[in-house]
Image 1 (cartoon, rainbow, N blue to C red):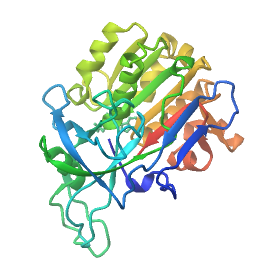
Image 2: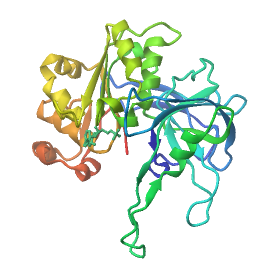
Image 3: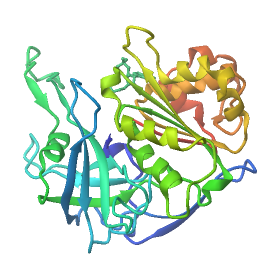
Image 4: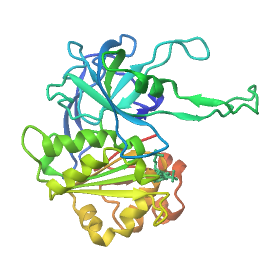
Length: 345
Ligand code: A2P
């Protein structure tokens, strides 16, 4: 997943700061997140990583191109410093249209905290090639411009071959993390598109980690336009067959049979387990993907009387009006509660 650098928390003034995160104790089940390191490698002083894997990760004929790219960072301060759910930075070579070096782009880690190699030396991410028609951005641009537009960093990353060097930074992000003791909680992971990246790391950490499989209940809800756009689909399917405490839900928005978004899927299946899961104060919601999913999910929670712990409604009047919530209301009056972790873009 490509995270906009501007949307991330500001850099810590010290590179080696270790933060002990304990979210405000407003709920006995507020997850304790433990230590997390930020900016072991700062954007101004990137280090060199080497690509060790690059594989397509869609399951069939899709119009999109998504790759799982793994980068060896051994010998750099990034090695061993990251946790599943954080992001790392990539700097594409060359300059932007204003002649400035390309800025760092943040990508969600798709690996567990121990990396792809089990020793914290190999980070990975899930990259979708940005391929679009150009849309004029400013008043002084030609209104009729509509040439092919290729996202710089996503295509650079996807083009890299095994053995190629790449400038990396990070880690970044201090809240979108698994609890320090995962067994104390249950999980609802909700993704759209490449928002699946952190969950590919987290689910592997929970079920295939060195301490043996976590017994907690884990529900993963994944939304894509078509079934051919499902990412890591075979892997999650196999995991669901192996672990009775893990369920994998596919939600397809442009299917001929049923067109649905992740929030509506959860609501439709409330009485098939989601109400019970969401009512349990052990449960933590993690959502990652398109911005619109956040207000959609909050509306579902409000409609079903399930806001406790998941939402912090700053303006009580707003709760009454939940059917009319939009993205602006989210920013102004409704925030994620202590048991809700959000990465939307
Ligand atoms: P659609 O594009 O059909 O409207 P991708 O990143 O691969 O395009 O997938 C994103 C998925 O999220 C698509 O299925 C998209 O549906 C869906 N989507 C778009 N807007 C929302 C929203 N507000 N809430 C939940 N899902 C959404």
